[in-house]
Image: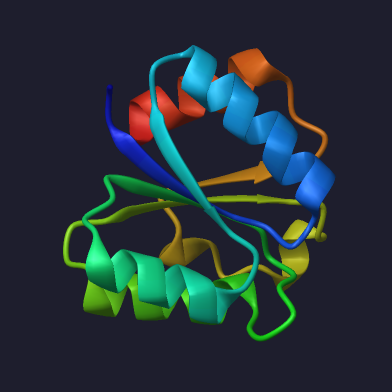
Length: 114
């Protein structure tokens, strides 16, 4: 398989669809539905990139991105969210995408971020 991606989103339907898209492109993908689950998985395995939603039940995307970067040196973080970009701290992300996003734009952004 290709590079590893941790997909963090509390929307199960969105997560399932994104996982299918990423795996069809050869990415090794795992999912987490909370920030705590993401921290746990990232602590047990090295991921090349995190695809992160902004609104999680237990942390904001900004908080989760900052902690993942602190604990997993060199990890790339791409925000994929429907949240208004005025609330987002862009400096903690390698890229910011707003939902809905086309698969082509998503995949191109991931390639450019890796």
